[in-house]
Length: 631
Image 1 (cartoon, rainbow, N blue to C red):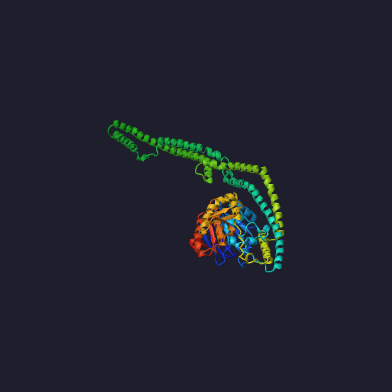
Image 2 (image 1 turned 90 degrees about the horizontal axis):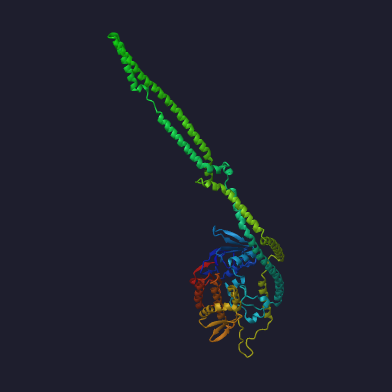
């Protein structure tokens, strides 16, 4: 898990408006002013909102409203963005990997919390607050000593300290006003407990409703598939929609035969035309150009003239020469008759050519009547091959069968007893939630968190007890200085939280953390302490000069260093399993300057294992970090 970006508008401790990109490694977040930005508290308000508007406390002074958004990558590898109107509503979005556009996951606070826990990989709020967030108020030296803590009602003090805990409680100046405030807080606590109980029920119902919705959403995929299949079925082409004959598939099947028939008929027609052309000459030579014809005429005239001329003047025998003009004229007549016959044949050839053309036209028209719808179908379907036409036209039938199959599948799922029970249960859960939400509305639009009221009540009671208590003697009865009460040992609470994170017992966690915690502690304390031991309840003892000293009796600075060593050890070991960001605010205020470079190197080492975000204006940490971000 890694935070990617934080965006704020009118948020206390941040720039008036800005967007800050957060990369991996050890980052230093520099606040705009001397006040440390409440980064950890803002993250808790965004990621663990109770939906009651308590995050309105983060609105900048003088601003009417504020907004905050956090973009982060979950353990599932998906990028999420949570956006909240401080004191108002909020939404959770998921970034679609394909389109890179945000998609709404939920706008309900309880459903969002359930989703972040189950899907995104957030730990419980207490674990995130006590392990992955480190604030100045959490340091042991900033908490009340044991003697003071005893005055607090253990039932209302809470098991774990909060980020809102005060470092010390002062005696009440006006006991009567404080007692009146106690009564008001007790009344508020009753109301807060009622609301908390109702909210607990609502959260439980939300969890059940979420599981039921997930079970019911199992049919959404089938419904979407049915919708897509029906749309595809409606859009699938048919002969009617394309304006094609009903027997287009039969025409496609007959097309090869029709093509072969056309080619065969054209081949036979061409053979007949060639044979006819071979029998009849293409053209007839004019008779006037025929030399044989003129030669026959000339010979006939010659013999006719000789016969007539010689027969009259010389001898009658020469008159018989005129008879020779008969074969000459006959030869010419024969040629003339042949010319006439050839003219007749040529005219017949023209009429046959017309019949050939008519036959060819008829063949082509018959083929076109058969092939035109096929070509029209090919063009309408946009296919290159005729073999693709049947598949394209049969697709509607296949899609219809697919729709029927999916509807049968949906009916089978919806008829399943578990699905029917979930559908019935969902309505009942919804009615219960509506009733509880209505009751919550009647309780008031805004009620503080029960733990916050408990802590304030404990502080007020403690202030009254301190005001009524006699002043503590400055010296012990023997005249020596009274020893200071030991500080609270933070180990049991932290080891218990670590056991929950590692899903094991406290003793196993101790064995996992011991060696690394000692390494951190010896480095931070210049080897004044040689080791750390824990008992079965998780109470810690520091080894110093052969002695076992309860850590609560250590000097406050050394106890803070031990706590820092233990926190960094838990984060380091936990990051080997699940990476979650480690957030520190300016917690090294009282640490010696000579130790700050060493702490910066430790944090930079943690930055190689998980994302470390350190809110501090100190320039030394910025120089040692992997990058700085102005918030």
